[in-house]
Amino acid sequence: MEHTIRFNKNLLIALTSIAWLVVLTACRRSDIPVSIAVDGQIITRYTQAVTVREVLAEADITLGDLDRVAPDLYRSLSPGAVVRVIRVAEKTETATIDIPFERRVVINEALPAGEQRLAQLGVTGQEEIKTEIIYEDGVEVSRKEISRNITRQPVEEIVVVGDQKDLPTVYFEGSIAYLSGGNAWLMKNNSAARRLLTVTSDLDGHVFSLSPDGQKLLYSRSVTDTIDAPLNELWLANTLIVGEAPVSLPVKGVLYAAWSPLLTDTRIAYSTAERVPSRPGWRANNDLWLWDTEKDISTAEQIVLPNTNGYYAWWGTNYAWSPDGRQFAFSAANRIGVVNVISQTVTTLLEFEPYQTHSEWVWVPQISWSPNSRFIAATVHGGPLQNEAPEMSEVFDLWLISADGQLKVPVREQVGMWSNPVWHAAGITFGRAANPLRSVSSRYKLTTIDWDASNPRTIFPLDDTTPGVTYPEIVRQGATTVFVYNNNLQLLDGAGMFLQPLTANGQSQKPVWVIPQSITATARPNRTRPLTVAQPAIVSATITATTALTP
Image (cartoon, rainbow, N blue to C red; front, side):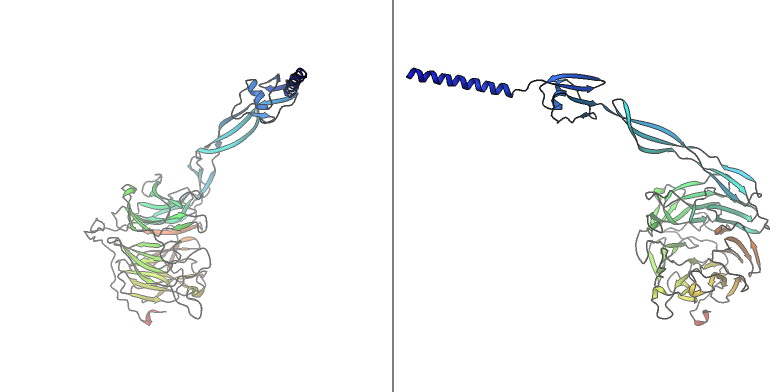
């Protein structure tokens, strides 16, 4: 009995072992056929690998960083599976293409009609283009442009075409510079001796200043309208040497710049602004700098720090250098004052309510110094006539203000917002609106008063049938006035009896007129030594604030 039990146990163990062996044998996978397409050939393997990754490893196939596999590496294999390895390569191709130059025509009134001259030779630009190309198994499947870089800017060809008008030659003393068609022009001693100073047609009009000796013109040029570019650039043209190319100055983004009024002073003053995407396209810094153009720009001195004081500060501040070089008058939308160059102090002389334009522009008073540097003439926004809000008032008066703040008096009421007074040796010339309560669009008559605000007389137009000027742009030397009428320069001699056209192209603006004066001292103002400058004959005047001064 015991023997039988032992035999049965051994038989059970043997049967169990055989069962487990059968199970293990059944669970072990047999080799399956797999095809691998790679590098232009097909490799057939019998493998026990479970995934695509495993069979590629068995076949010693290495994948590059960009290579692709189909099916994916983590997919399971089935008998007869085909694994495709796609070799991917990237290539960057660089090509250079030409940028054709443009041809621009500039009208030149100094040349006979129809005559043409090549003012600037055109140069083809170059642009470098980089393209990314994708190859799969050696075959291009895509290409994409990844960058463009202009390695050489094209230079436009400029052709000057004559358009000389049959105008009589007008003689005057000194030099008159003006803007026309985006270019700077100069007339010296007579209107027939006119010539182009620039041919770029991109002067933006923010800066246009002739040096006291008439030998150098400071102007601003607009630059590309990309938001990261400066608003504009300062340039300098020599008015003496015909054909000399203008020079770019290391000052960018300016709303104001002007030469020192002193004959031997090589400094300029300027105020800066930043370009912005919204209108008007800039944000003023309301600063003020002095820089000697014969020295490095690092020597520029800041006499007014950037600020946002007052209403509409983003528009900017008007500046005017006093004839003795010691002060600047300034005007903003709501105030007028002075900046002392020596002490670098800013003093507000007069405040008023800013004018609400309901638009994207801001009205700022034009200011003008008396030749003795003691008084300032300015148009000032006046108070309401009835029940309108102060900022809505359409009243603009002519005021005289002493630089020391002791005198502040309106001398002509309701002259209009564009009155733009100009103080000169013989008095003050300004525009007087025909419709003073709609002066934004009114025509203006040119009027002159004496230094004491007496003796008003109209100098243009003398009759009521001739329309006045749309925007008084006035320069004056002695008894002679140059102004803009119907977009042309006109010279008015004497008491308005002799009107002579200086230009006829209908594009002229911003005249500046310089007659070099002798000086008795050449030093410029500093903190230790005063300067004596010979001035035109000064008329002694006492200005009294009385009702008799109003029209």
